[in-house]
Length: 174
Image (cartoon, rainbow, N blue to C red; front, side, top):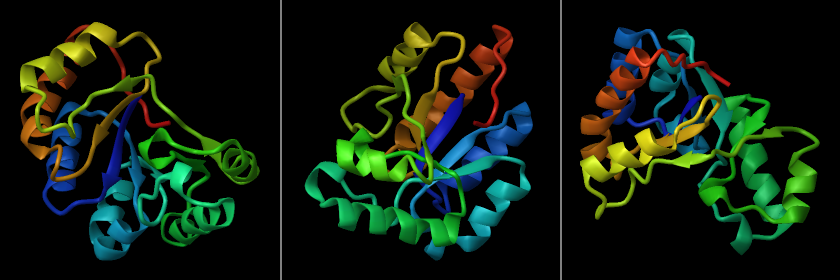
């Protein structure tokens, strides 16, 4: 499964939608509420293209640094804008008490392949090899729909998707 965190973004999301459309690939976008509020038209374009959206909190808060009440409130605030039954914790950080509470409302979706596209020091070649060398059938890959990932994502993602498509992999939205 192909997933993108932290969007929508007016540059990166438009690029992603174009690449995914050309290759006939569906993905899941874990959106940040304040970004959805800022870019409602781009959010609609994601849905209109047949992709799935998930909740990634309202303000991308770290669950290890917030109380259950603050964390759950932030996630629920995002859901007014996102309306999804799936949730991915920002940074993958969530305390057991937060998890127990949120599991009542959402299916929690993590990943098994972190692309590291958001790291400035990682080269495009290293990012490519990291994903290629670790993907297995059924993997959930996370990229980032944000400007911090853009320099690497814009180069690597089309190459990766073409590679996997040529290998017979199929991508589905969660």
